[in-house]
Amino acid sequence: MELVTPHIGLIFWMTLSFGIVIFILGKFAWKPIMKGLKEREDTIENALLAAERAKEEMKQLTFSNEQLMKEAKEERDVMLRDARKIRDHVIGEAKSKAEEEAKRIVENAKENIHFEKMAALTELKNEIAVLSIEIAEKIMKEDLSSSEKEKALVSKLLNEINFN
Image 1: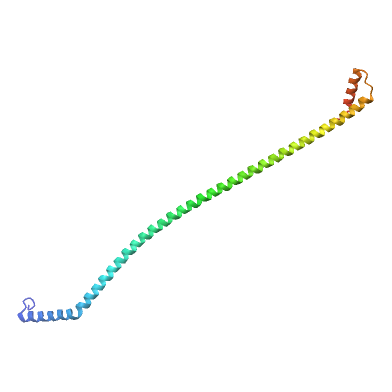
Image 2: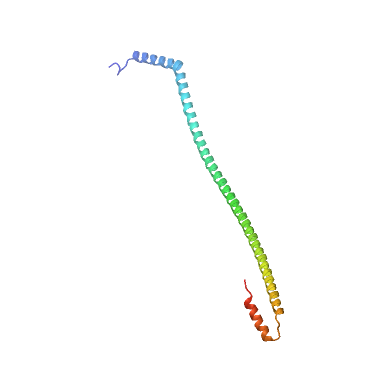
């Protein structure tokens, strides 16, 4: 029961021993404990700041990556557009060269046809001239006194001529 109703002596010694413990703790333990708590608090705060900075950096990196992707897409589009222009230009040049070549071939063919036609006409004229001369020789050999004789001779000569 003494603890429930303490005496003055007990209170005095308890207070004195409590004061000594507080003094010793204050002198030797309180500063290192407070220093450790302060260091821990600083470490936690630095870790939180580092996490916040990392979060910001991640946001910036995400934004940077999106920006790079956007630039890459734009660059790809420009390259595709340029490639299409080059393709169209090459196709256009090929078409124009093909058209020029076709025109040149057609012109050469027309020219060849014209020369062959002229050669055929010349040969035909020469053949007609030779035939005319032959007919004239035969007419000269024959005596033509009447028009009936002339007609008969011409018919006869035309039948004799070999048309090739």
